[in-house]
Length: 115
Image 1 (cartoon, helix red, strand yellow):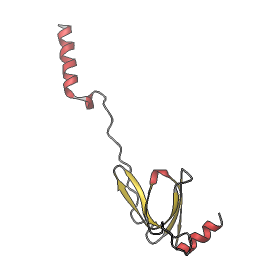
Image 2: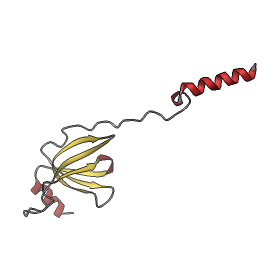
Image 3: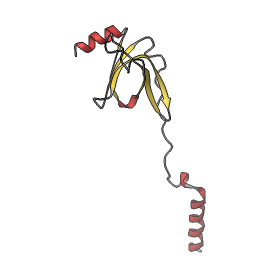
Image 4: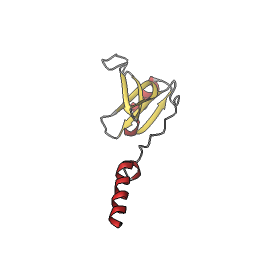
């Protein structure tokens, strides 16, 4: 009788699926960043990797899959236009360590020169 009860219990547990037996916990969706936090600003971004970052204009937050990104147009480093000027750049928010917001590209350039 005990063996039958154990077999029935195990069968019920197997049929009920992994969610009730301790399967993977539900994925936690990251909180959405504010939409207009950087509206009209030029932002200087530093990443965890020193090669990631930049100065972006027209920045907004966008979601791609389960991750959020700051997306903006690459600001010109000088008055001379380069191939990278105006290119859409996506920087993962979870890879950002520091952000400085400026009112203009010129203000951002001046601040960068002081670094």
